[in-house]
Image 1 (tube, one colour):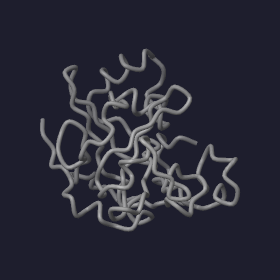
Image 2 (tube, helix red, strand yellow; image 1 turned 90 degrees about the vertical axis):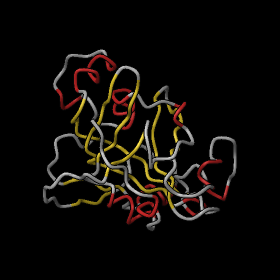
Image 3 (cartoon, one colour; image 1 turned 60 degrees about the vertical axis):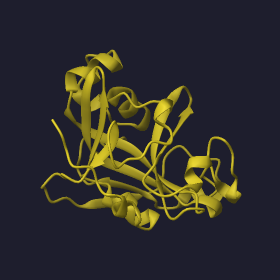
Length: 197
């Protein structure tokens, strides 16, 4: 089973535009255990140096944020509250911005996702959050710095051929970030049951 990865040029969009463009695309992770993939249904944009909710706020360059200062289309993973979260690096080199993938709709490898999550609950609970989807798809901190234009972790342009409306709202879980907590930089597919909240 093979899908066509999005080309490098796709990621050269402004961060807010990219966050919306990623909706409906397929996030795929290939491992020895098998392939797991899901349709991206929710994202959040983080606009770097001027965004108090971004890890790169103030142009802070650390070992953790280093990949954000590179070219777009690379993987930024980090651990928060024991959960690994996955982001798509955006903007041009030297402008540390990224898009968090918040939720996906399971598509391939659902049985594998259940095993990884150690659960037998309703499928709606499988990948409806940023920590849930990484565990289900087998994405971890070791994926940090990978290019998204080829396996093992990539995003496919073989998008779902379904029309959908995009909803916009405040980002989640960033209450201590001052005025940035109110920026409407979360995007999701209206009516999709796998959106996190």
